[in-house]
Amino acid sequence: MIEIFWYIYLGILGTALVGFLIQGKKTVAYVTDFLISIVTWLGLFGYVTGTDLFTPLIWKMVFVGGLTWDITFTFVKGIKHEELEELSTPVQAALFIGTGIITIGPLYYGLFQYAF
Image: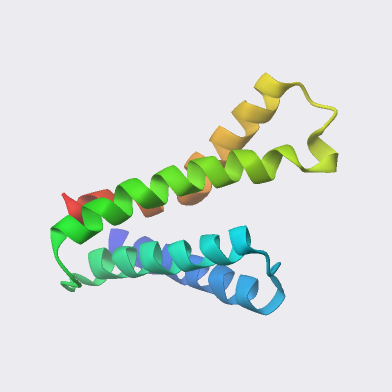
Protein backbone atom coordinates (compact mmCIF):
# COMPACT_ATOMS: atom_id res chain seq x y z
CA MET A 1 0.00 0.00 0.00
CA ILE A 2 2.78 2.42 0.88
CA GLU A 3 4.35 1.84 -2.55
CA ILE A 4 1.28 3.38 -4.16
CA PHE A 5 1.88 6.61 -2.27
CA TRP A 6 5.50 6.65 -3.38
CA TYR A 7 4.45 6.22 -7.01
CA ILE A 8 1.87 8.99 -6.63
CA TYR A 9 4.47 11.30 -5.08
CA LEU A 10 6.93 10.41 -7.84
CA GLY A 11 4.27 11.28 -10.43
CA ILE A 12 3.47 14.60 -8.75
CA LEU A 13 7.15 15.57 -8.73
CA GLY A 14 7.54 14.50 -12.35
CA THR A 15 4.50 16.53 -13.34
CA ALA A 16 5.90 19.57 -11.53
CA LEU A 17 9.18 19.16 -13.41
CA VAL A 18 7.40 19.03 -16.75
CA GLY A 19 5.31 22.06 -15.78
CA PHE A 20 8.44 23.98 -14.90
CA LEU A 21 10.03 22.98 -18.19
CA ILE A 22 7.06 24.37 -20.09
CA GLN A 23 6.38 27.57 -18.13
CA GLY A 24 9.36 28.09 -15.83
CA LYS A 25 11.68 31.06 -15.73
CA LYS A 26 14.80 30.67 -17.80
CA THR A 27 17.39 32.26 -15.52
CA VAL A 28 20.62 30.51 -14.59
CA ALA A 29 19.41 29.82 -11.04
CA TYR A 30 16.12 28.31 -12.19
CA VAL A 31 17.78 26.16 -14.87
CA THR A 32 20.28 24.93 -12.25
CA ASP A 33 17.39 24.14 -9.92
CA PHE A 34 15.65 22.27 -12.74
CA LEU A 35 18.74 20.15 -13.48
CA ILE A 36 19.28 19.34 -9.81
CA SER A 37 15.61 18.45 -9.49
CA ILE A 38 15.89 16.01 -12.39
CA VAL A 39 18.85 14.25 -10.77
CA THR A 40 17.15 14.02 -7.37
CA TRP A 41 13.97 12.77 -9.07
CA LEU A 42 16.01 10.03 -10.74
CA GLY A 43 17.37 9.03 -7.33
CA LEU A 44 13.86 8.85 -5.91
CA PHE A 45 12.80 6.84 -8.96
CA GLY A 46 15.63 4.39 -8.27
CA TYR A 47 14.56 4.10 -4.63
CA VAL A 48 10.87 3.61 -5.38
CA THR A 49 11.39 1.08 -8.17
CA GLY A 50 14.34 -0.70 -6.54
CA THR A 51 16.54 0.01 -9.53
CA ASP A 52 20.29 0.49 -9.09
CA LEU A 53 21.29 3.69 -10.85
CA PHE A 54 24.95 4.64 -10.39
CA THR A 55 26.78 3.96 -7.13
CA PRO A 56 25.72 4.81 -3.57
CA LEU A 57 28.64 7.29 -3.36
CA ILE A 58 27.14 9.33 -6.20
CA TRP A 59 23.73 9.34 -4.50
CA LYS A 60 25.32 10.45 -1.23
CA MET A 61 26.82 13.43 -3.04
CA VAL A 62 23.51 14.09 -4.81
CA PHE A 63 21.68 13.94 -1.47
CA VAL A 64 24.00 16.43 0.25
CA GLY A 65 24.33 18.72 -2.77
CA GLY A 66 20.64 18.66 -3.63
CA LEU A 67 19.50 19.30 -0.08
CA THR A 68 21.98 22.15 0.31
CA TRP A 69 20.86 23.64 -3.00
CA ASP A 70 17.15 23.33 -2.21
CA ILE A 71 17.50 24.96 1.20
CA THR A 72 19.64 27.80 -0.16
CA PHE A 73 17.54 28.31 -3.28
CA THR A 74 14.27 28.29 -1.34
CA PHE A 75 15.40 30.96 1.09
CA VAL A 76 16.99 33.17 -1.58
CA LYS A 77 14.04 32.79 -3.96
CA GLY A 78 11.49 33.03 -1.17
CA ILE A 79 12.72 36.37 0.16
CA LYS A 80 11.85 38.03 -3.15
CA HIS A 81 8.12 37.23 -3.01
CA GLU A 82 6.13 40.46 -2.73
CA GLU A 83 3.18 38.71 -1.08
CA LEU A 84 5.32 37.62 1.84
CA GLU A 85 7.20 40.87 2.44
CA GLU A 86 4.66 42.02 5.02
CA LEU A 87 5.37 38.97 7.19
CA SER A 88 8.17 39.05 9.72
CA THR A 89 11.37 37.16 8.97
CA PRO A 90 10.75 34.39 11.56
CA VAL A 91 7.26 33.81 10.16
CA GLN A 92 8.66 33.66 6.63
CA ALA A 93 11.31 31.17 7.75
CA ALA A 94 8.72 29.01 9.52
CA LEU A 95 6.51 29.10 6.44
CA PHE A 96 9.34 28.05 4.13
CA ILE A 97 10.53 25.30 6.48
CA GLY A 98 7.02 23.92 6.95
CA THR A 99 6.26 24.00 3.24
CA GLY A 100 9.63 22.48 2.42
CA ILE A 101 9.19 19.60 4.84
CA ILE A 102 5.80 18.78 3.36
CA THR A 103 6.73 19.15 -0.31
CA ILE A 104 10.33 17.94 -0.59
CA GLY A 105 10.75 16.10 2.71
CA PRO A 106 9.65 12.76 1.21
CA LEU A 107 12.01 13.31 -1.74
CA TYR A 108 15.03 13.63 0.49
CA TYR A 109 13.86 10.85 2.80
CA GLY A 110 13.72 8.49 -0.19
CA LEU A 111 17.00 9.77 -1.57
CA PHE A 112 18.63 9.28 1.84
CA GLN A 113 17.32 5.71 2.01
CA TYR A 114 18.60 5.08 -1.51
CA ALA A 115 22.05 6.55 -0.83
CA PHE A 116 22.74 5.20 2.62
